[in-house]
Image (cartoon, rainbow, N blue to C red; front, side, top):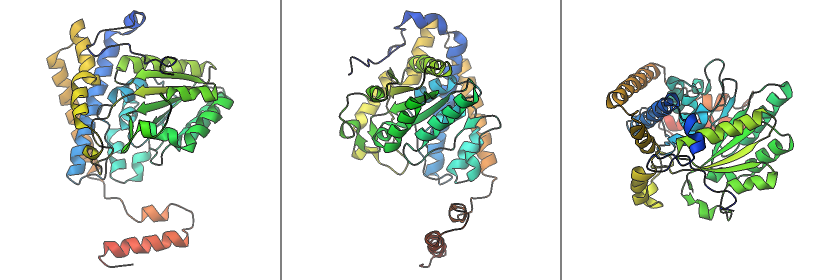
Length: 356
């Protein structure tokens, strides 16, 4: 199966282009946009980890190392497309136009953080694993029924492929030929469980065979491979070619969330090695230097602009009142059940320092 679904690479670890047919498509404008978004997403991610450690936002899910997956795929979207993220895909949502303020509000526990900008079809982040896949298939099918050229992309990790919703989403999309791209970020660990303990299949891409849809396996740290293969899959979807399953093989450097300790189950030396070899930003920088497009002053200007943007978003968010804990209980059902009423009483008793 690894031979049937070979890893697609456009750019090697040294920044050299391996597929000459793409060379003319790799314009300076595209490269500069990719690099700016990669820097922006990484700086934002690192700032969020810092904010969580300071107690200024809640538990946070970092994505450092996976930026090419999210930036490259989101840049391939068109204005009217749908984006269905997990709790770890704010790199994709901010690339697609979500505001940093609203992303931070989400991590502060505010419902407003789930509201995208006007005109943007960005679904609220899915915390339950894989539940967003049937939603994406349904939204894509609705676009098909309406006769639009809009498509949907849905993100999920390797662990999601062990869930029933993964199979239901792919099956529905396959049967109804829905214009949706299933974008798997295979960072090789579902929390603390390595992929070898989740499945016997050698690849995730091969799971497409069961549903008679396109399956592609790419180097998820190669932003050009991500961008061009996602663009190709979206184009196929728009033109009646049906869904595609993309397996983007990547690596997350840090913890599953800030409540996790990856040193207990993962070799940290591997992360150090990958920072020097497969890192998506380093690889793009090597390519830019070969082309004479890398400029230290330009990079510093980007970093200064992004720092100012992040600081402004934090300032605006911290002016917003803290979320009301009662919202967790009051807006689940039209009329709260007795179980939710009991939970609400227990919570507020605990908050007052007493017992339920």
